Image 1 (cartoon, rainbow, N blue to C red):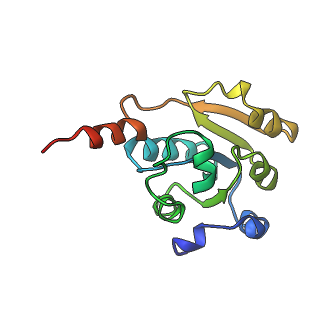
Image 2 (image 1 turned 60 degrees about the vertical axis):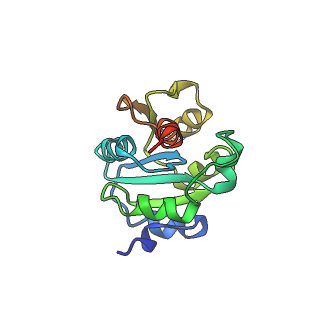
Length: 159
């Protein structure tokens, strides 16, 4: 399987999902400037099931999150390729909306995972996943790792 094979458009999801080992774990995010915190989080998420599907915010979707006009720094295709290169990742699927609700309906994962900085029970995504018998949980984040912190360090650097 090539890196591009792991990047699946929504219309091809049914066929791709049928080949995945269960249980299917789903997480989502922008994953701009991939760093150690992301990689360890995704490895932890994958360890909870047989496959890991990532809902990746498209560039347009990421801008809806209010992270700044210059974000994401890496374009969606570049971010998708970086994620697809990770052993823990089974499928990457872009979504254009502010939240992955529509994508979750297509994937119907067994487990929805978010970072420990979220109150997962308060998320509408969790309610949706529970509607078909799925579960939701958080994964503890690694302190000191965030894209925003990395961007700030880069901007502050003075050689």
